[in-house]
Length: 519
Image (cartoon, rainbow, N blue to C red; front, side, top):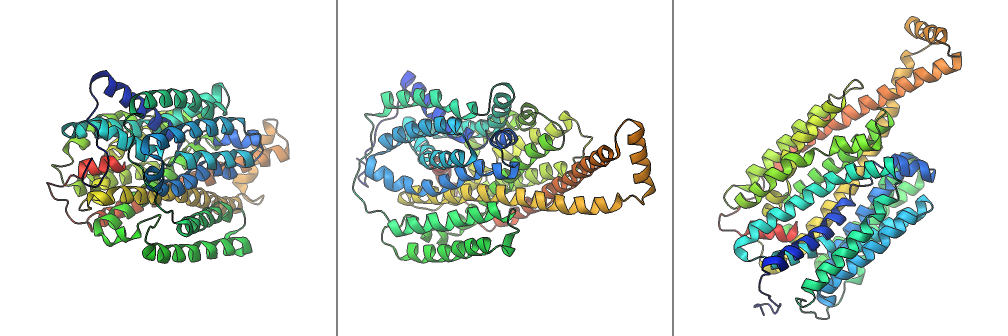
């Protein structure tokens, strides 16, 4: 027993540790994979289910929001159920909900099952980190950190590539069905090794009011963001109502959590400068990154003629440099000021987004992939340094709460980033389309000449106009895509200043180990 009453077990050794690492890694990989595997499949899912691609983004955001709501409950559930039993239950339910997603007959059912999938996945990543760290001796915590970093870096990259290949060669349903055998194998592996290493349990009250308020304001905010573009934002009474519910719910939530004896979220953590500065930086950065990860595949598939597999190939090279650099960061984080690593990451992200802001309709596959290769450097130096900053100076008993709160905010930011990016992308494209159409009038000599040329090629007048309209639409979305990337570049570079608002992490701080526990 540790001083705080928690059971402590010796590290695993030999083949048992290898099997445990593989089982936990498979479960983690499966969970993280599902945050991105649907990105390149959205057009196919939307077309098959008879909805617009923008409505299809609910498939991504619904998972993310449900996940963000569930993550803060991990600590309470662990105390009530035990970390191994909770982990096993989460994996089983995740496998079942994945099968249900693949069987969904319409978009409403698919979103409902994705909500279930995101909710039950909430405890999986925090608990897999906890069990993985407990499997290794303290002297090898850096190795555990490197392993976990590689898994969490490779999975989001593999998602678009695997999702694209499955969509093009099988059917989109299999992006969810593949979770079932992996999940069941992981259940068997984890249970066989860890069932005798269960954590102590105790009955603790749940903050029902706090949880209800969390669900209300996060849910209202996400629905507002997703429906706003369809309902013309605040000209709609529904959007105004949702905004009011989100704001009021958030304020009541904060007041309640500050005064509750057993809060579902420990909001007093924001009194720590490193926590709030680091959490804001990692959340905004993640939101910008995730929003761009959604926009790029949508653009190349809908307006550049790329297949889902090719769209996945554009996203895949991020893992090349990330896999090489991430272990080095994990092993040196206690010797290098994490603010330097984080600043370097944001600078590289800025370069990548700036390069993408120069994309045009003539760019080839190699040109689209180059920034993604460079992005691997930014990705590898993003999570670990910022997590080290966030958790530095906190006592051990607050690490779990800080991890849950940070992850909840980060995941929500990813969903918000997706909604805001797709909304602005469509809005700006509509504006540019209207401006370009003004230049293509029948009184314009160049427009008349183009129409005549198309008619000479065998098109009717209406076909010629439709052809020109498609070109105008393609150009409008290209300009909008450039603008989204350019603004993202400016915002991500500005986050460097936020990083340096945090205090320097002391050399003796166990930031690397704390970061592993939260990642």
